[in-house]
Image 1 (tube, rainbow, N blue to C red):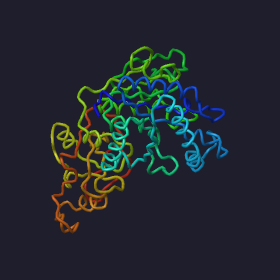
Image 2: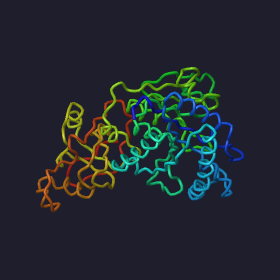
Image 3: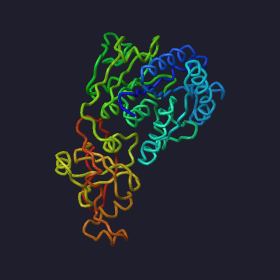
Image 4: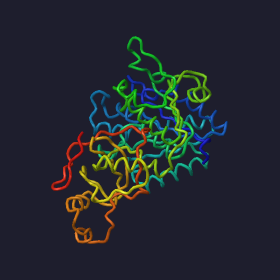
Length: 390
């Protein structure tokens, strides 16, 4: 699929579900799909990432958003998803196109093989003229395997399909320099770097799982993949085409003009931290300047329980995240190797290995265009090195 043919749209819960009655807002869905049909006639593929299933199912299970627990929300998602899908399906038929439901979990993004399988499925649907509606499978996910918000999920979908544009529809016109209800709040029409705005975006809506913070995190993921992102108000007669055509106010997040490769993007853009390691400042500088594998003797600290093939976050001695890379060892194996740097690796593990923890081709330096993750607490290694300061 050519990049220029695809736009990914994330729709917030409060646009899809009435916050008091917890019923579908059919008027909004009608306007939305009418505009989707307009874009499809222009040759644009559209993928929706629609929140709302939990909100629409809460009434059935006898709960309210402010009182529902985890199991309530999982049950509500199971009840609400058919309601949401049916609303889209019936209105889609009015405009002569089919929809398909794609339910994902964290592993579908973090495991590379599953990531590619999901990508292939979405492409096949688009080739058939079917509009995918992608959601997290909230009825079965637990905290450990959740993406947690549809903003970042949608951004990962945009990254996955090499979309040209990514539109986040919400209850405000876009990004402001502070909460838009505060006196003197100024609208931000264009953003290159999201980092300076993160502190001003705390808070979330009643029905949704994320506020403006997760939207900025999503925009950052999309920017790094070369995707232009817009945050705009959803209540408009032409909610999508009016944004893409520049006919109304929205915050535009400029895509990086030199996006990394698909492999590098998959490594660098994580939704959950599997584990981390600490290395010296000098080695971190070497990694930033060019290809350099991380070897067992380079490890100063390890945090987390991870498997071979998981992506590790790499910190210098100041606690600054500098790179991310694919581990060749489990956390148990790596701890054995790092604590005994002078003993033969084959003797320690029972199989031959070069002792490269992360190969250079599986290592991505963070170049100031990613949002950095805080260093985790813990992770000391007995007898070898020190844990980086946090």
